Length: 504
Image (cartoon, rainbow, N blue to C red; front, side, top):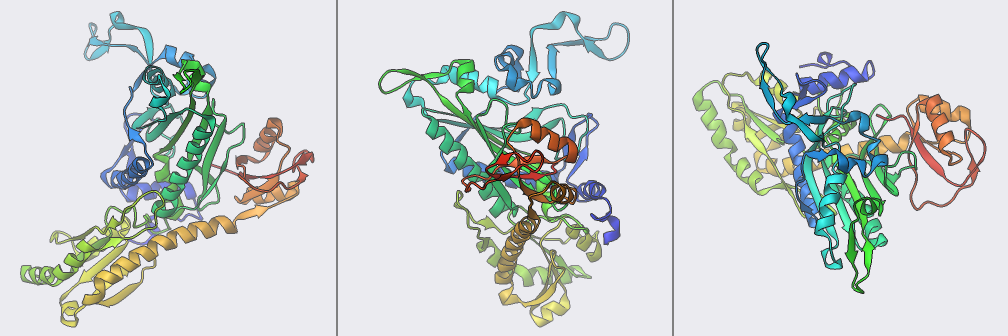
């Protein structure tokens, strides 16, 4: 398969993405409007993300649970300001039964089965979780309560895009309760570091780990931290968020605990989440004009061996020739420097002995799905005691002595992994611009750069800049020195730069 099979990124970035997702067999639009089907190969990548993130959560003392998909409307009414974010996107269950259509074929809603109280299909789980926490938390001995759930969420989307925006999507959501404000703040900072560890060392994505502005933060959060990643077209993607919720949900649901001194206090809360939009970030950060690019740490398959065999005898001989390599790969691993996960990644390999496909067709298939390394093995290789190993990221082919093959495979996978991260980091740093004038600001924003500029810290100015340029404040630097300047819109005084960008 050649590059002409995909629209080039430089010609139509959106078309390139849609074609890539389809050709790489990752997902497809569902017949259920606004929803998607995640195909096995795409789901295998998502499972690898989930497995590692889940272990990182557990290694930091958190536990999984599950809460209802259906939420009573009265629960959401307790936090109307928060629900206002989702109100127009909520799916509502009004009846509990169908019946045979008395006037024709099929079924209809039974008018006698109307619910006394409508149920909302989960747009997010704060309300049902905090109603549960009210019963569970009584004493300081019950804290901290560190709970995560892996779940699906429904929020109606009119303009869908696979993995980025669909009405139903998959995510994980943490909801923690703490005895003190500082414990909750420390928790929100810790979990942002966990996400950063995943993105850097697993997904190979460089992210900017800063604070959201007041207008961009999560409703009912006192503070929202984010990781913003630059996609290849220069736009930003909010990859995950961590929220310090203060005592807002504790007040709404009257969640208190008895201190050691037997005083009754409200608990402090955090929440944080990452969704299937991280698949969008993965694809948009690394993939090229040819096909999908997947970091080895997340790839479902690392090495494919393609026999060049004319007869069954040739195939048997090649398989026997490869056995020492297979045994070595069973003992090898992809070693990554994790902060929150003590794990080396097993190297996954296969030999494709399907005699219904030509070697050329196999090459195309594994290139399409971006298996990092491909090994072609034929009689001439066996006679020379070598293997021809092809790297997908550089298209380089190298003859490697069979006794050195396992070590070469292990080292090359690590090189690919680190190279993808360094490319992501360099792209971000090279396209982050400091500006001090409005004209410069507009020019660089139109060129899809990350722009660090001063603003006057009013919501009105932030909204005006957004209307005029489509740029939003993606995040505010944490722990940075004050720098006096003038707002690029109003020329009022400012004491710190913020990061502006166009975003998905």
